[in-house]
Amino acid sequence: MSEIGFGIIGCGFAGDLHAEAIMSTKQGKLLAVYDVDEKKTKELAKKYDTKAYMNLEKLLSQDDIQIVSICTPSGLHASIGIKAAEAGKHLIIEKPLDLTVEKCDAVIAAARQNEVKLAVIFQNRFKEAVHALRSALEEGRLGRLLLGNALVKWYRNPEYYKKKGKDDIEGVLINQCIHTIDLLQWMMGPVKDVQSKVRTLVHDIEVEDTALAVVEFKNGALGLIEGTTSIYPGFDERLEIHGENGSICVEGSKIVTWEFRQEKEEDEKMRRVGHGEKSGGAREPAEIPRKYHKIQMEDMVDAVVSDRKPLVDGEEGKKSIEIINRICNISK
Image 1 (cartoon, rainbow, N blue to C red):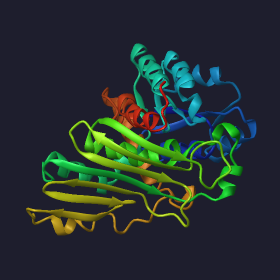
Image 2 (image 1 turned 90 degrees about the vertical axis):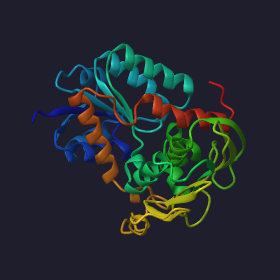
Image 3 (image 1 turned 180 degrees about the vertical axis):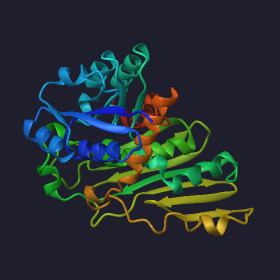
Image 4 (image 1 turned 120 degrees about the vertical axis):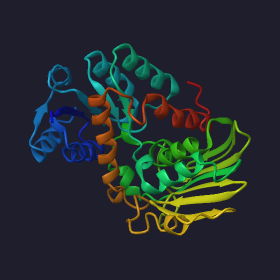
């Protein structure tokens, strides 16, 4: 079994998450890391016993690096991704793909033109509870979809934002709520219309810490997106999908509602899915479960080895950005 070489660009919290995930895969091997911050670069390289680069071009020129993992501030994702694609590297980009649809389209186009694969980290798609929900939808058990809600009532203390550089501070939609927005549109389909209110209610930051949106989906269903990092002490995110024949709600990693007009033998078992798992990052980023990053990294390795699309490719990664841009009235 041949090794698949990885390089990481960006050596902060996300870079460490990716490094751990890469090293836990069967075929992945971390060969080099890079960051503009020399201290962070050397610390991450030492932790995972790998090469530290102080020059991005040198990392991109290393022949045995096949996949580049991009963990920089979000507004740099597309520009660095384009450079890596032009160097012939496959891309796995920490969410979001970038901050605007225009930039997302640019890196998607670069990956296509250079015939490299592009994946976006949305690790929550790989949760067992989410798989169960998706399967029930595909089986038609909920019938016609009526209502879909993405509710993220998290808390971040002032120190969380003080530790970040100015370029690293992002609003609740693009940073915390995006995962549940991604799941909402994956289940409910494309959005037709959005009406929203976006505010900064608690934190001393220049971006939103609270947002509310009413959405109309193209299939005629309605929905609600609610995101905040202002609600103490923070609660597990919740995805609610309601149809004419049933309802499924996922809270954190567990199914909390699994009800249908027509019961099946396995339904009682499904109601216990995820109940042994710890909660996620509602109160502390460090509490985010790491095993799903590993599963998605395994998918990327297999996509390269098998020459197929990653399960969450660039086009999929762009969809949540389209919704968030509309909530925030960003046109490009």
